[in-house]
Image (cartoon, rainbow, N blue to C red; front, top):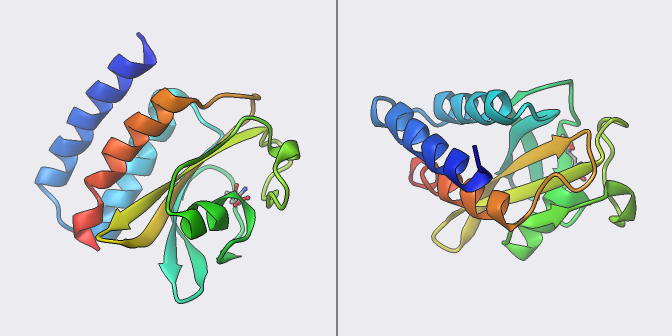
Length: 150
Ligand code: SME
């Protein structure tokens, strides 16, 4: 199946999951699980804005860093810039925070409510250049469903 079709199906699946549940943590947990299973990513999860830091939220994968300052790493950069950041090779990204040395490429998609970033979805891959504009568009549509829960 093509990526675009896969994301269209996942969007429907997530819509269905969210219809029956309004709890933010429960829904973030299931969104992380759905994406992680569907694509076999290395790490899939959320960091939540708390003051001037991102704090680890629901995720799938190995143990991760718990706090990331504003503007730091890929996550802190996506938060600061309020836009999706695609990193084809984490070694080429200045300030990348290596929670796991196995991670080779990454995408971070902010969850935006109104004008504010309230959380980020972070996905890591063990392969280089896993993510592209199709992932950005697909993931942005999925996280948009979570924004009203904040
Ligand atoms: N690599 C991220 C840190 C989070 S872990 O990948 C789960 C970053 O540079 O922001």
